[in-house]
Length: 121
Image 1 (cartoon, rainbow, N blue to C red):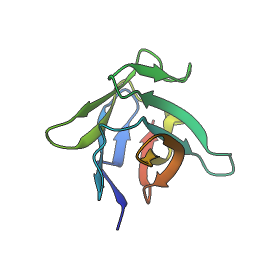
Image 2: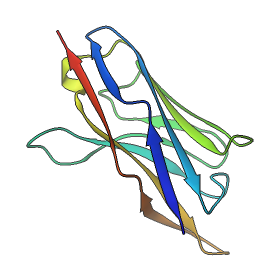
Image 3: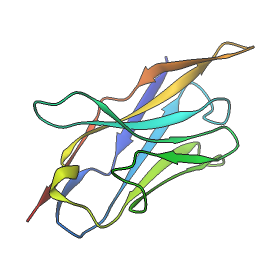
Image 4: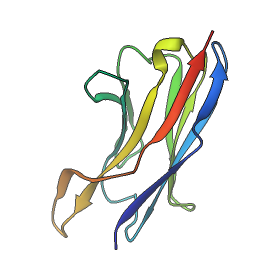
């Protein structure tokens, strides 16, 4: 059974840091792209960051320069290092992975359960 397990959320004061982890079970993260999304109360889910198969990162403008997405193939884990956190970063963070079919990647096929990040003044 394919699962994405997230961890690392919590509460932190503005200016602080957190590091989220996402570990897939049932597949290797090296095959396709993976992403982080977030959803704040009363708002739609929004894109945060993406990492390509080759390790190239892409970021939403709102987190550029503060967040770093990475992956460790050996550990089969994706990370999101979040620095200089702001109150507006408060949200449930989700990791998402493409599904490898054997010949192509299906975007956004798998989702984690989400981990809460709360940033206070």
